[in-house]
Amino acid sequence: VAELAWRPTPLLLASAGVHAAALSSLAISRSWEAPLAAVVANHLVIAAACMSPRSGWLGPNMTRIPSDRVHNQIALTFDDGPDPVVTPKVLDLLEQAGSRATFFCLGERAAQHADLIGMIRDRGHGVENHTQRHPNTFALRGAGAMRREVLQAQDSIEQTAGRRPRFFRAPAGMQNPWLFPILAAAGLSLVSWTRRGFDTASASSATVASRLTRGLAAGDILLLHDGYASTRTRDPGVVIDALARVLEAMQKLELRSEAMHRLLPAEAGPRSR
Ligand SMILES: [Zn+2]
Image (cartoon, rainbow, N blue to C red; front, side, top):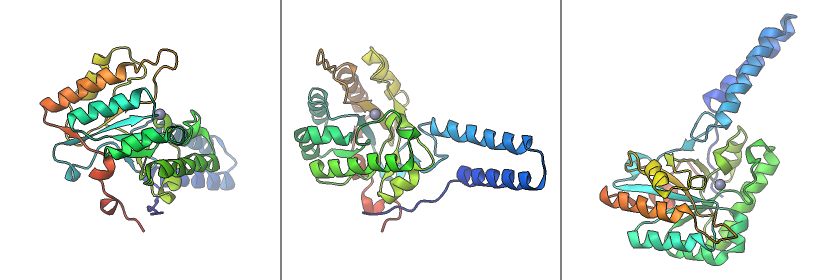
């Protein structure tokens, strides 16, 4: 496994400083109000960073493809799949448009639908890591539980896709300070997005597409979902129509989507050993 280097960010170093200063101030004076207020304020800042999917305060977080890696390419990304109803339709639309995308899959779903993972891989798309089971409390868990979610998905996806993921997207985009050393040890880089369409919450594909294509430019990372066909109606929802609209807008702008592992080959990435 290629390990990436982990270094604490300025926010984490400053936080360690605040705690050390609060402790030593407690040791030399009997007043606890100011040190306590400093520590509480520091924890509020860290909590805000945890809940900001696009922030890089806790560790490296890719929100765009670096401009030296792209000409006319963007990165379409699909979370929470694969899904037997939605994923094949997404693959057909991408193929018609001559575009390749990145699928942040759940390890459990990959194991259940190895045939779909094979289809994604055989058409040249990327299969990357979005945890094993998508726990909604992912960012509230301890380091051990988080590491298990990440590594189980690495194994499930490697077994079905034949390639170990290099990119990770956190459930709901939530981070915490111990996520980054776990990702670095697994050779994974955190990816969030430039823009998202809220396609799982919106009933209007036109609205979703306009959120995604406002100011669309090379290097953008767009977030959609291919994991939510209603089990009752088997309705692929707004994502298919929204994707068709996004691909049309891309064509007008002469942009195409490329898989992230192709835009950022391992040897061009951060220091690995
Ligand atoms: Zn998700």
